[in-house]
Length: 339
Image 1 (cartoon, rainbow, N blue to C red):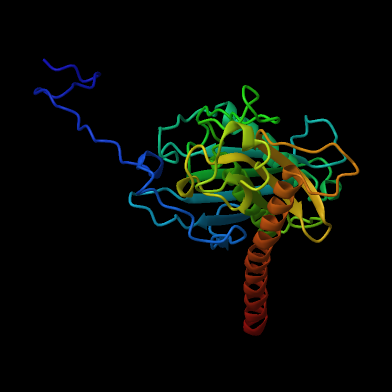
Image 2: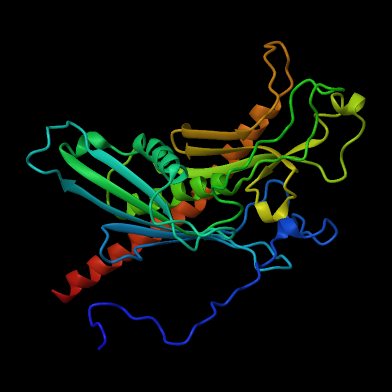
């Protein structure tokens, strides 16, 4: 007699399918690894669309194209939903400003190297806090007392290791024998690209929800990349250090070798007010503390590159918000003509 309260397995044994891992661009030999075919200041085309999630008050979708590689490479795909402003429960204490809650979550299939769990880990919580910091300064929270604004960002696909434990570059200032130099490490810019894309996508969704803001926030990423074919002896490393580093905007992990990226920086930038709302840097970079030195150090160059990348992303953000605004105006005009 069969037990109807228990799920019985198959009578015959089954063998689960085993798939071989797909090769990534970082596992390819240097001769076949794809190189960056665009200029240091050229950004990839950004696809941004708003009002794609009907249940949400405001929503948006952002996608970056993947570079042409010899394998199936990943790209960046983000979706954002905004709910609110909504009234808080009566039991909640009075707040003169709205409560902004941001949650960034990776889909289980988002990471190309490992499958993520359904429970948020420390990486997702850290990115959520940084996203809230970047958006909080742009929203007029005092316009919505005792209310809540919820922002949910889901990462559908991402580049690089996307939250895996990675070490920073083994470069240390000072160069020379026994004093640092270049190592085999590097900085994975996958998380930085996720944060910059989430800032742009969330700002578009907030504007689509009709929430009053001081300005729109766009995200930008830049990195200090070692020039191909650079290098030399340890004695000459300190003298040629400035000539071997180049600032690259919108870096992609698929376009650079693991040890080529020395440091990277992601910013949240309000272009109309010329203000930074978020700065996140990974890696070790040399900076100058001499006030009389007129040359621009690597940190300033990298920051300026990230701001320029955010300013270019702001153009796409403006077009996406303006397209939604024109659509709403045409719909309202059409309804008035019908009535």
